[in-house]
Length: 434
Ligand SMILES: *Cc1c(COP(=O)(O)O)cnc(C)c1O
Image (cartoon, rainbow, N blue to C red):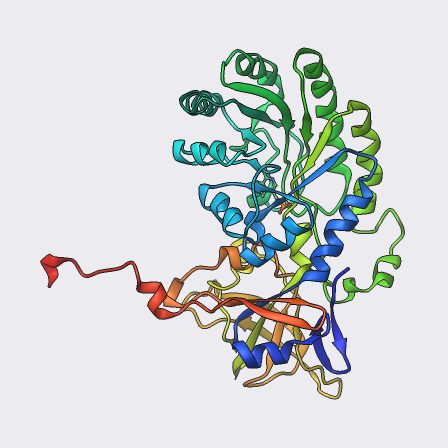
């Protein structure tokens, strides 16, 4: 459920008319709903209330400072994947003491920063990484808490670029050699074995693969608990969201149309299935969702530049492009596109919705049916809160979009549109060309 809906004919984010935001700050612009983020966090926490739970928001999904501050205020930690992300959390006025540092390629500098800032734990992906963390911790006279990422070899049945829990992925180490790796870790003087970690993939819309992975790894965790004083078990992120019917999924009754077996994954089902499997361990449980917490809490606004009528095809050319929202070109992913001003008296049209970039891949939707819209009118891309702005680039020397945060009837520009001057600020013409 989310807080984007039509008030009369105008699409609103909470109490704010999206047309007003576009008028003030231009397009393309991302708009985030604080109420939706808050609901997502509290629903997830409530559905796992039987557990000693720490949610670590996977901030690679959306790392806007304002968004990070909101998460910190809601009591989440962060799943961090770079030194830059650590510094973003600090810049947002939060700390990383309940956060975890993940990723396959941590550098010495990043490990040092994480240790100095008191990160809760490192999620280790390989034995050489373990040796490096031990070395850096030793140099600083500190002890590093670690969990090794286990690859449970479960097929998450999601897009190939976002599945991570199969044995042929680059992530984690196989369960068969994990005991040995933990044995080796425990012998290192500046390492404290504190947990077990897994993450099987992203955008999972059924609970089955989560259940299968947890059932597979729990006995290993229980066995490890006998040898080490474990503190936690991290079951990763990956809870999926609704893309296909995003607008309607904002209403509670949309969910009730489905029988319990057919309903897309909800935090309630996730909790009901996993909580009884996890409770007997008596450990703290870490969750690292990104997309679920922020995905349906954001839209991208864009203005129509041209409606180009072809011989047998219409092209709706808009002012957003693949550099602003990369998911459709990168993962063939679907975003529902709706008019900001709804006019039910207009006929529908079928069009390819495309951006201005010189690439055939700069296409958001092929043969999409939507309300007829023309030059100057606004459209909104729904479910664009996760992996939207954070994947934006400057391709074609386009400044990255503006970002706005809404709460109730209040809203603020939280990230100004990137100017041309900012884009070229670090560049120079070398002396030998002058
Ligand atoms: C990306 C990632 C997540 C978050 O994935 P979502 O699908 O956004 O929930 C969590 N943990 C790890 C290790 C990740 O790489």
